[in-house]
Image 1 (cartoon, rainbow, N blue to C red):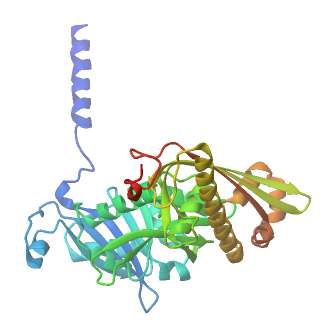
Image 2: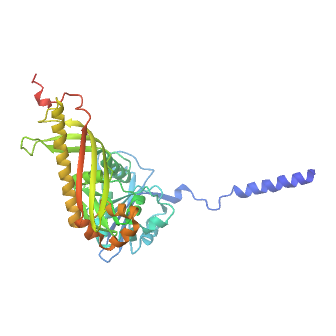
Image 3: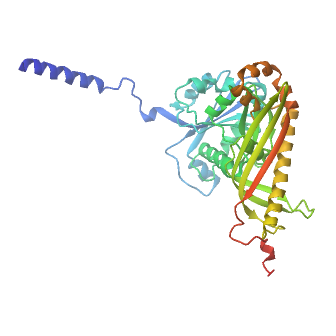
Length: 391
């Protein structure tokens, strides 16, 4: 019995020795961690890949441009190939580490690339490889995407993190951009209408500052149009992606240059497609709750003052909704996702309408109703600050 116990313990110890080995071990020094990538095109039809890597040994600060460059926490490597995978494998030619993709923050794509080439061709590698995360943000750029990776970050350690922070805060606080990560993009491209929305970034004239505002609209995987920041705010309201922001509206004294502002704390829209025979009517019921953030010509003292104030905001928002819908119908772009709702509710009907949906969307009748609720006028009374002398 004793011998059997000793043999059993010996076998168990041998098994423990076997499992402690690392057959696929890799040291940190073998990897370089990707923060961002930028896609452009070459004259011979290849993809130009610019990869931004994090440099952990950097971090010094210098007042001069030379000092800043020496203390940079990142560096870029550029490769060219007909496929994304080949361009990525060629990175190893330029320095002695393998690119690691699970810490990548953003993917930048030149709008000219996705005007001519389906974005699915570019994203295919990232969908198949096990390292890239679905939370990686995807952004469209105006002009050469590689130039964006040359900009020095303002506060973050690397530009990849800076771009990610900009896009998230621009969507959350100003509603002038849209949050689209790789997973969101995949869902949109595979939706019934196949319309996808990418945040749009631009460089200043001196190529030293970035701005995250605007939307690139993709149809069947290609860039077809953009939306201005004002129209983005209303689109986010209609698609229930609006977090915080403001509504500017003119005074009722006839001076269009003098405007007041409402801080929006909540905006919800119920979209109801109504089908009668072969015609389509879409009802949009929006409820906006906010607080007075800036007054110049209004007075909110009595109930009727508040009602008049809310009515002016309502008319402004309804007009902006009409302008947005008119633009989308003219371009035949169902960015609101009406077709997706019809598909979810009535797949059989969608099969009949799918082939000519663009035309049907353009001819659809929209009815918009907006309800405004003002919670309070802030710390000041319901009069403009300029009227503080009035008793």
